[in-house]
Length: 262
Image (tube, rainbow, N blue to C red):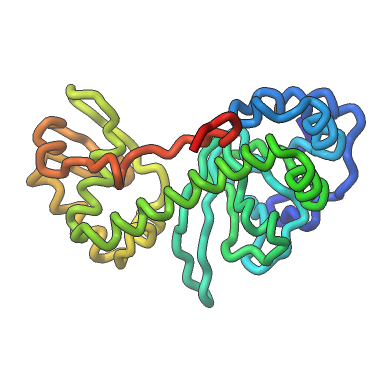
């Protein structure tokens, strides 16, 4: 694994020089990504020959809003916040988890990023030069299908978010958010909020004060919040009060369109 980058360094400043000693590692990583399973070995070899592995600590900026993509970043481990910015205000657009491409639409369209990408939990990234990535997608049908599957999952996640924001009250949004964190356990549950409260509030389209009041109000539904920890005394009651909708709260997995019939 390559050395840790300086937290002030963005992807546009990372030297675009592949490490010959790392080609075996990058090829193994690409071969391990399930939704690239139908892509030809020759294409993966081409991507791996130019790719680099990097580990970035929490707080590192992967790229800034309005930057032009230099790399196509694959998130292999950790998590990345996608943040919209206006003046000094940040809003959480999405928290990315592995294995995913980080804003591939901007890379493919050779367009400026609409968001900032910041590492939330130490992230392991595979960086493929943007031009190499675009050429491979254009020339390899299986890779094109795989990336289309990735874009589809990302689009559907955003549609789910919009439905959540527009069809639920603020109390319902907070309650369903907490219930989704609980998982399937029915016994005494304690979970930790995945990001800071102000980012969750912005993601749920709420002011921080409104979010805090809604969290305090969850106590009457058996969910008590102290700091960043949520304790659920009665999981069944909480789920009954805030039932999850599979067409809003379901998980979108990435799968290639390869070999799928219309």
